[in-house]
Structures are given as C-alpha cells and as structure tokens.
Image (cartoon, rainbow, N blue to C red; front, side, top):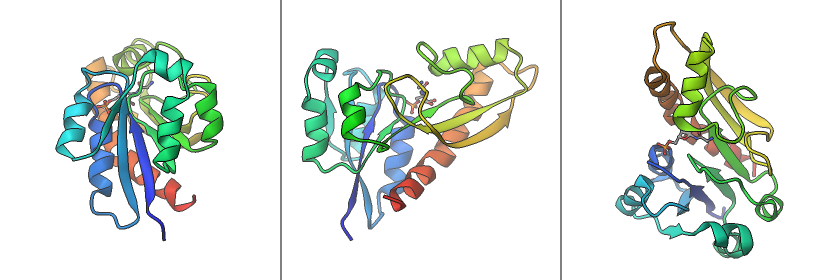
Length: 191
Ligand code: GAR
C-alpha cells in the first residue's frame, strides 16, 4: 500500500503538530511529510527541525495571490492537510483542490466560540466570561469560512466556576494532544 502523506499547517507553538508527528514517527503507512507555516518566528519551526520534517515558509501574498502552496502540496502528493493552530483563512482555490481533505482543530465546542478572531486564548476567555459549564475540542473539515465546515469529532471537559482561561486552555490542550493524532489516523484509513 502506498504511504499516506500528511502536511501540517501551523502558525504558533506547534505542540499539536509535534504530537501528530510523534504519533506517526514509526508508522508503516502514514508519514508527516511537510510542515508549512506563515510565521517565521513560530515555535513549530524548531520542533519540525528536531523531528527532521521539512519546513516550508510562505507569506500572505504567496498564499492568497498565487497557487504556489497548492502546487507544493500537489507535487508532494499530500493526501491530507492538517491545520494545527494555523491562523489564516484557507483560500477558496485550496479548499477546491483538496475537497474534504483539509481538517482543523478548534479549542472549543463549535458552533459556539468560533469564527474570525476566535483563536487561542480569546476562545478560552470567552468561554470563562460566559460561565460555560463545559468546553472541549472540535475537529472539523475546512471550508472557505472560519470554523464552519462539518464537524468530525468533539469531546468535552468540565469548566469549574473558579477556572481561569489558562486553566481551561490546559484542559483543552490535554484533549487536543490525546485525540487529534487518533482522529487523523482514522480519517486517513478511510481515504
Ligand atoms: C490549539 O489550541 C488550537 O486548537 C488552536 O490554537 C492552538 C495551537 O496550539 N487553534 C485555533 O484557535 C484555531 N482557531 P499549538 O501551536 O501548541 O498546537
């Protein structure tokens, strides 16, 4: 069976990217072939180097005004694109080039607390100020709008009345690291 090839897009620290890469490090049928980022300062770059995964950096203009990033993914025979803390909207041409082959993780229970500007700590702050009794993670397909594609997987965690946004972030991160690699593996087995 041909090796299935993943590309991970990340803009920040890259802890999810690293968990996914570690999960597949000794896998016989799946590999993380590429990590792509729009942020030359992103922590994910050092992680990728440590993991010996090639990194591709691109800027906003290249992403939105050329087909270069899509061409790279096609030339590299990427089977699934995994967004892990990637903060840019995916251009329509890329969504069409990879139909149902781009997934994202969101640190809350969509459709609540999603959309433009709802990322990272902003999400957890909103959850705490709304006094939600629970939060969690949503893994979903990506379309041309922020956080609106079909949901593939959700799991919840309790939010205590005394929890700070940092407390919620820590609980959510445990769920992300625990579930994202496995959900990606399951999805790949159906491709
Ligand atoms: C994760 O919590 C992810 O769910 C979130 O960014 C964090 C990235 O952490 N994504 C979003 O908020 C997207 N709207 P990481 O860089 O350590 O993987």
